[in-house]
Length: 397
Image 1: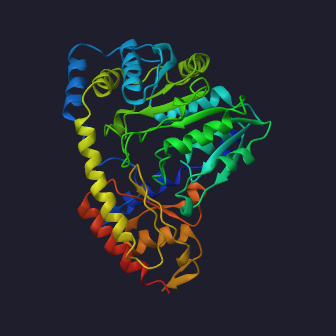
Image 2: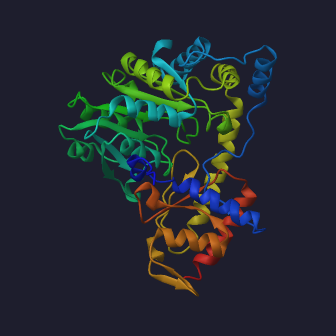
């Protein structure tokens, strides 16, 4: 009997995808599911970007492209990083990928050897640790709490570093918490890294534009940091282009070349049509993105206030992305009819099957006392979802 590769035992299906799948199955049975599990803007891609894609088809951009992306796309990324972040790169330091997830995979595969330690603050996006596991690295989790708005301190970072530490991975704004590191907080972390030159940093900035507190700050801006930081970004969140599959990384030249080499053996380049549309997205006006974020801000204000009216939920005030990450441990060891809540997984299944609301367990993000709710859906859905949460959480005694 053939056996599958051992590496498959090191990873699991993301809970985010699992919950979306379960929700779709129930919806197919005619059940009205309010989906608060999916991290996807519910807006259409802006028209000017769609038109650029149509024009690219008509002009014959339907052939293979360079592995790292068209030169014009990489130049557009360089332009964006200078315009928005004050960071100077050359096109050779940019690799365009099939979604930001591939950018992350390229970098982790390029940097992490078996036994290397990778520091990941928790809660964190589920894919980080799984990619490290595929490389046989060792994940070192650094926990944060709702009381500190799910951000770690320089002291915690320093305590986690060992001679085996190779990489630090984090996102700001953060998935799943919506937390945003301020410039001074990032400067504090950068001061720690300055003492440990062997460590690379992956700064996942995919939610950059969905920020409610002002200008986005990148850890790459501080002295000595750009030379060891890999900035990850893409079009999915800020431009509502999830299905287009375009991410990119900006890195020191040797890492960019390594990522190009790895990508050449996995996927080669991403979609040529998407790349042409990306030039328009990255160099054009940001009004549509700003309008989308303004709508997210209204939803955030509503759901933050509404969740605080539900007894037992502990809620903070996230500053970015489109997630709430409440502490739900007050409901542990409570029951209603045949449902007995021992943990966050149980509560998610209870809410899905009883309240018909789909959310994601915090266990997936290394925060077992929490659940993640996405407000990337209509206000009508949010109002209906919150009403159901309040009703069915209220039944647990």
